[in-house]
Image: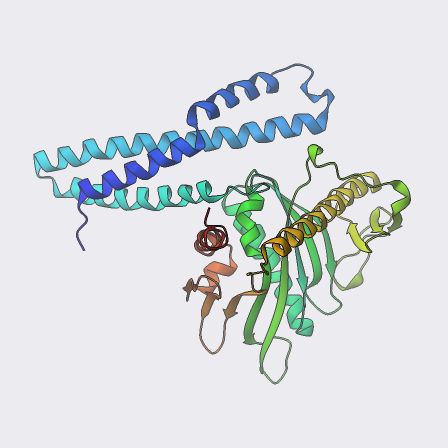
Length: 371
């Protein structure tokens, strides 16, 4: 179907202007300048944690600003190219304009998703935990497949990620894993992935080649920041140290550097074994524990608000199905987004599902809070 250039260009221009307004490009530029001054300060690395936060946010905002400015420049340039192609009746240039316009459409639509992330914690980095559920060894293998899927997604976007802990299963796969995605808006983006993911396939662990259904759960938490005031008294924590282990229970560390924290009032248990020292593992485990306690607080507050408003939880637990046999299909049970390219999805191409989930969530929020 032929694309009406003027209509499509005007629509994209309107969408991009809306993005520029919501993002507040002038304020964004001013913050980049301010962060550049801080990043060039000679004493910046006297406080490594603050230095990391400054340089990380600067890098992200610079990338964000370049992305918006690049889209604006390309949208202006394509109008000139279209005019030339019409004046000179150049079919090759016309074809190039159509291709570029379609590409701009996809990129502006993807960036528009960011404007839908307005929750109080959406701007945060994310802590993701994957756990094997029903399905035995297949579920453990499935949890490891999901871990790879999300890490590949982060890698595709050049988002820094750090694995804090992996608990390997006896035969294959993992019991659980926790990792961080260390860019702004990672929580708002990935929070729509929370829930139970179901896999249907011929089990590679069944010598009779039978079809197996297995389940893995995904939990997404916002990273705790200093102003969250999640204070944990020392006497509320039991600290255990142990030797890190790899697949099959094999020892991968000759010292007791892995750390397990048990929060006695709630029973929450967190471990970290992927850092080089006990001190680093304890710090990482404490970050995860603080995030879990923050989530407990948020859920309690939400339950109180829902009780006052007479609302229940509208989110279903099982949110996506991955079928590898007898046919190939990945389908989101909330948005009904689906694809037959299961290989690409399991290799981290999940943006279509994430974007549909964000739009779906915004629609749910609009229904429950029409104001």
